[in-house]
Length: 126
Image (cartoon, rainbow, N blue to C red; front, side):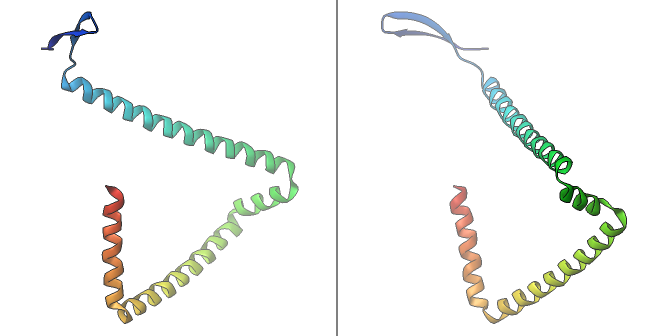
């Protein structure tokens, strides 16, 4: 049951009805849904604009058309992806080994940096 109060402001009297708590929560939930829908629609518009721009560029410039056709050719694309994956794996292993060696060599500094990072994240959240 909604509560009703009599309010007198500057000589004008009026009755006000207070909304139940569930109405407040449903309103805030509805606003969140609207924000999410707006974010998705903005992202879709941006992606669509980039696709139109890329299509226009492909139709106008021969060099771009050649590069796009080379990228989507299945024979060369597969071998390039495999080569790129191998290079990425090699670089990742080198970085991982270097980070592990440096972490072992400078353990007290890593503990300090880790604690400082955690504290900074909590500080930025509040």
